[in-house]
Length: 322
Image: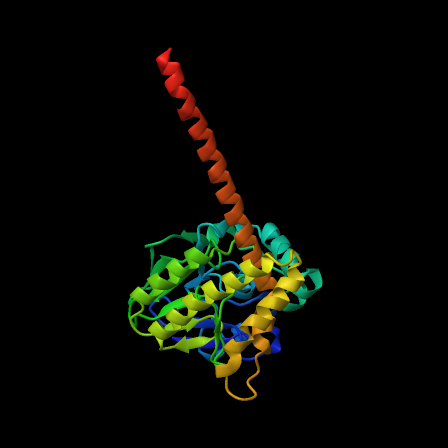
């Protein structure tokens, strides 16, 4: 397997695609449309001609991972495009996907980072779910459903090496900084699902983790443990901040300040700005605020249903007595 630097936002070692050589070669992740030139050049340097690529798989449909898949698929007409079944319709018609990204990043920032999003012809799309396989001839990609970062997130296991392509399931680990940080953008972050997904990845990984942001990491158990602790820590910080203010900007500032110590282990003069390119602390706070509000609403709904059921149960003996 070979990593291809997508040079997202003209920065090296921020977002990666991977070529897995096989009888039927597969590209895992495409990066955004703004990165297509870098990905095409990388594939050309690796000797992959337009009719050679058999498959493209994306771990989820966020634009830094899959925004360029429509444009790239045009260049590789024989490639089947694989995505979790919750994401397939949004690659065929990305209207809602783009609108969601614009709400998070703002229209101008979204266009600068990701560029336009071209649809994938529906007949070229195939849906994936937990336990599925993508057969590549002499090797296989096994699919794990790993929600938490997103409801349409999958991780991919290479049958030959046991490496797992983790997408954003654990978070972001940039190689020049060597600090793991969660990625918690809206709209459907779920902390407990994320923790469960990370535990499953830890159980299944036989060799290394292949981060989309960025590159391979061999310390599987250590990184998974750090990821779980930090997902929970970030969620707790945001929950406490919500008791002080409803201002998301302020909550983002609190989250940034209280997690700044995570960079203490970074090498001197490490460029940490890549983490902000991928998602500001305000964006991470937005996702966690939404998570806690959904939890609260779910809890209140559950209590209301329980009270209603309890009220019915209290009245039923009177009915029976009569």
